[in-house]
Image 1 (cartoon, protein in one colour):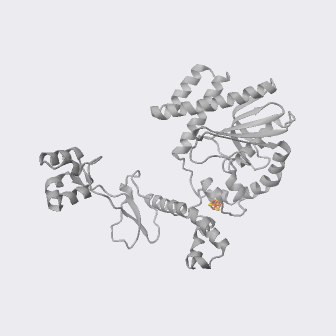
Image 2 (cartoon, protein in one colour):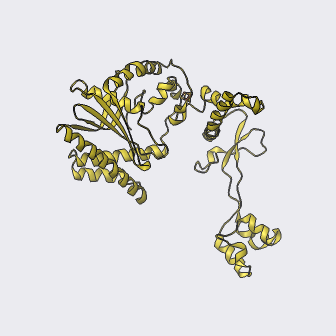
Image 3 (spheres, protein in one colour):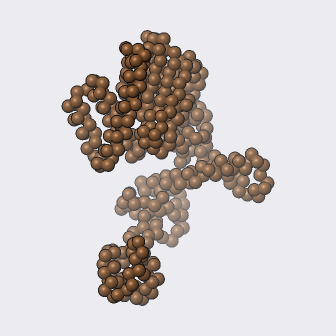
Length: 389
Ligand code: SF4
């Protein structure tokens, strides 16, 4: 498992805007999502390809490591990963060649530890690629996700990497600018931001230092913002600031809309935009807690609704064919549903002909108030894949 800094670069948007998030997140466990796993594999494969191309790894070593990395992927996943990492390698190679054209001693670092602890206590991260041509530094960051387009403009993660790269090259050469590029192949996104070295150092001293100090000591403010969701804050389900932001809307619900000022209306609209997301994530969190066996006052798990289904559609079709029902009645593109066929045939007829082919699967566990008449679900017997959020 890779080492992770408390004041991580990837989480910096969060702790720079909400220093207390570091302390609050400490109460929750890390859970690696399937997207994060996918990203880890893409980075590792990109690294192997770059190293073999640059002569930093033998071909046989590369083949051995690549095969081990891809062994659990489907053919389709593997193909996608191969293609996108090829694009990444091509982009890095082109950028490096341009740097070599400017300065034949230009250097390239792959997956290098970048230490910015001068600005944020114990802070470090891993830069995917750092290219230095003795006059400027370029950081390239591979983003394998395809959910949100990542912008390099004033991106604090990349700027912290920039500070870390200056720790390596800043005293050796007269670095005038630091360029940061996000390479996000699945969204066809290449985003670049360039900053003068002195401005980056100023940002490190004047913006990062104090916030990092507060975050590390657990004494800073708790502030709501886009960083709560974008930064996947682990504390958000129980965070009072996050909850207060979303419950402000109830203030306005009691008034007639025409009594709101324009500012209130716009504020309510902005809250409403993130309201659905908050409700969904809160429901999901409560469900997961109950599934783990936690007791929450006034709530319980019950079996959710489920729909009747056919045990074997082919047998249903055969049965109807044998009784010479017009096929157009019960099949359009696919076989009619249980409820539709019951309506077409009439309840008695339906039960007599097809009753033996009907089953009702157990409903997925769902959260209910304690007074709900349905019996409590035994979470120990649950299939965790099959839950209703
Ligand atoms: S949810 Fe937002 S406000 Fe709450 S701790 Fe996390 S980042 Fe801060």
